[in-house]
Image (tube, rainbow, N blue to C red; front, side, top):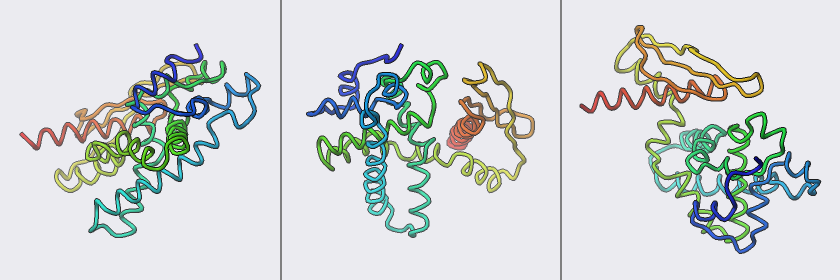
Length: 233
């Protein structure tokens, strides 16, 4: 299976209809598919990803500048970096189920590329670049506000989950905690890892991911949500 859903369904999902349909197809075409189909190099998403990365940095910088007037340049830089890094963009792409729309080569498909953070985060930037070329900066801004900068409180909690959890536990609980790998499964080329956050022998968060780091981030996020819910009661 080289593509689960059609480009037209993606347009419906993101609420934007392309004037140039070729741009959308390019944005969801991985180099492995282009190579198999002997499409020229401009037929994959890499150039659009380059452009989308710059557009995302501009829009997110403008957003943070106006929404956080008290933060210093260093604080804004750190916040922007956490919001547009690979795991964060992959988190946003998963909300869109963007991986299901990608055109992948057979080899990439068989090794779990549709769920690989590096691929779906790159595709997210490529879609931004495609929208920018097709509809201009305002259309790209609308997409970024809706799918990257929305629900920022929870996303920010996820972006910096490991740091936030460490600071919360050290500041308010003063207890020891650690991450423990409790399971890993799947073939070597397509492994999944399960990690728990343990505090005084009790599991306070559990997460899974394609890498141990991703699983730890998800586990930390779940722990933060649990501790936040507990403190609100």
